[in-house]
Image 1 (tube, rainbow over the protein chains, first blue to last red):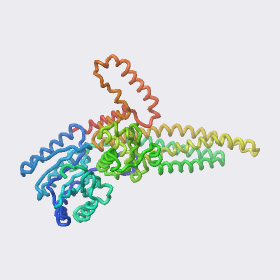
Image 2: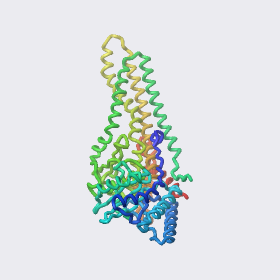
Image 3: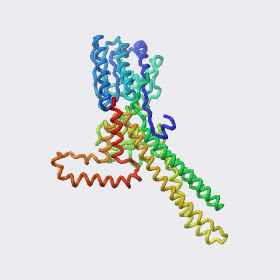
Image 4: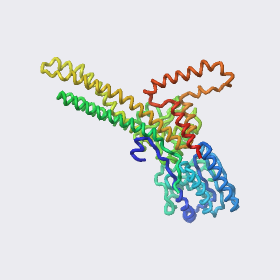
Length: 193
Length: 321
């Protein structure tokens, strides 16, 4: 924020950075080779809905678009959930080897929101992974930062920080990881994780 | 394709705020010029008290800037909390995490005050030293969505660096206030001593009087301007907060709850309440209007009506296709 904006009490809404998402498929390959985590095929987009008709219409369009593409490829329909913070999660499920399709779906949601002027409402996108011991892991993409961070929940609102740091090291060659650890906020109970 | 934006800035508010700050600056320059002029005119050594006031006032301003967070937290008896401390701490942390991620801001420290008065404040001179404090009464009364509205309002204060801006703006009033006091005591003690001294320094007495008079005028004007500026900053924070979460109505309902005006919305059936109307609604409204004419000038916050009207306008803008 510039000096003048501070002086005049203005905030410019932060626009999201979308294209970085397409680096995910190659990172998924690295992640499997380095740490044994494979994609579950599930991913989600989280955004803050805006009150009023305009946003409701866009949200409906996006769901129809995804359901349509899902019906064509034979995958599961899109699932919509609302979390306790009032954020909406659109969950898209594919087969575990279809990371590209998953990312395309997620990108479609994101760009639909951006094209309709609701880009600042996007919070994060996450793609879920599992390893042989059924440990859960998500790569979370922060739209406003243009960076990723790992999130590994354990039972009862604790997170496996050691695993997260290991994953950060493993994929830092493929993805731009968030260096400021205070931005790695937990997404407890994120749908699709 | 350039994405169109729904978040148009409010030009009127920007212009009014800019004008207020310009006037404050103008008063400051005029004040300094007047003091220098007076000192030169009378060849006074009393310039020393002006210098003293500047140093002390500057020290006070810097001190309050650096200790604003600690002072505010101890006044509110608030404790900085971690997400694992309690259920309510976890919830507040969760909301702040999301608001910060939406706004791309670093997360402030979070404090909870045990008082039952519903309120919240953010303080600290910059993003790194920011503290966000909510009271237990606020958490208890508001829904998570309303709480998010309040938190995004407070985070907008942090983003706008309002602690810094208001401290700088108050600098002038601090100095004028100090000068009033100094010249008053100077009159009492210094003036009397000089009068007894037959060296003929008669200029000392009127100079102190003139400095005091100028300071009083400057203090009064800058006080009103600072309050005006504060009200504009509040409106700006409401606006940014509402746009950040996309939920102006949640913030509006939080405002109503906090101001206790939710009691004014009748929950009784209209027919049942009708006999009471004559006693309740009209006097309540006209009393408020009478108060808003005089009280509004001195208030640090805009009237509830003004804030709700702005939020309603934002809601309408966001809903447009």
